[in-house]
Amino acid sequence: MKRDIEADLEAWKDRKGRMPLLLRGARQVGKSYVVEKFGKAAFSQFVTVNFEQNPEYKTCFSTLDPVRIVNAIELLSGVRIEPGNTLLFLDEVQECPQAILALRYFKEQMPALHVIAAGSLLEFVLNEAEFRMPVGRVECMYLRPVSFAEYLDASGNAQLRSYLHKVHVGDQIEPAVHERLLTLVREYFALGGMPAVLAEFFQSKSFLRCQEIQTSLLTIFRRDFGKYAKRSSQHEHLQTVFAKAPGLVGQWLKYSSIDPETRAVTLKGAIQKLCDAGLILLVRATSGQGLPFVTHADEKKCKFLFLDVGLVNRACHLSLELLFKESLTMINEGALAEQFVGQELLAGLGSREENSLYAWLRAEPSSAAEIDYLTAVDSSIVPIEVKAGATGSLRSLKLFLTEKKIPFGVRISEHPLSFVQQLLSIPLYMVEEMPRLVREMR
Image (cartoon, rainbow, N blue to C red; front, side, top):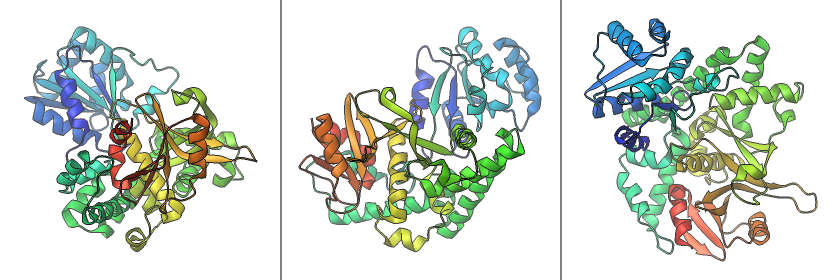
């Protein structure tokens, strides 16, 4: 399965002044697969050190000297490592934090050797107070679940993705093409972007078998809790938050909705752990006063997203019949569509950007208002609503446009591409194209 990040890895390989790479992302999103595919295709030699499967390799990093490290790995693996021709992959690197520290010395003392490190629980090591991240000597990329655009490529519909790249504001998409793309979105809502699920679907075409794999993935994530819960009570709180989160997608966080019997500070800690694991994403409220959004963000107000729309669907036990008959923006009161759009916006950030999403919330009693997402295209703020219906009230969006003096907003729905009265309407299958379409409006 081809991933968009492969082009970024190719550019990294050939770049002058390249640094060792940390590939970050949640478990089961395909990090090891992508690196192995890239390593075998782009290098004459590919060497993997998996610290979880082969803990004996940890002793190679008792020193920070790259020459001694490489010599030790060669002796253990029996494989010659040649700078310029070999990709050295340090997998499950969170099991050997010393290896992360050593990356800076590869940059300084062995810059010709290509080194990539990755790990499912890497964020827990990086966030430890005593850990010294080698800033300025290591670069990061982020891998997320397969996006809808990548799904088009992988499912044999690459021509549709290419077609959408060429559609402009004002163009009419043929009704048959529009309906075909919405059907593919429905498939994606059911399957999501976890590579193991998609690999099964492309082989068997069985949604039921894919649901079994989704259930298995959710179980695997739960089993990981013991790896980052120091006490049994923490494990229980992680279980509680993880179980409740899919049903709270798109809702403003209220700790009482998770567990009214547990202190907010305890639940906050569990939420942070799940965020570190990449299983939960937080959409933070911001005033929209300017860029960057984080400057005007309210850390106390946020909404839940989950790792993957297919896992949300499975965790909520939504029926396949519902997914293929109901309006996409109405399923589960619109939560599934909001999850989907959030994932697509994150995919649009590219592999270099950390997960960061923002929404607008005004909680004043007399004029309460909210907008699902705020994003930036170049230096312009773009408000985004995920809505059903031909127009909907869009009261909050209109209020935001007036208050912030912004020329137009975006509505994402099942309706075809159009622009009418300050509203750029983008169909769900074109979220990838949103930045380009916004630029066309200037």
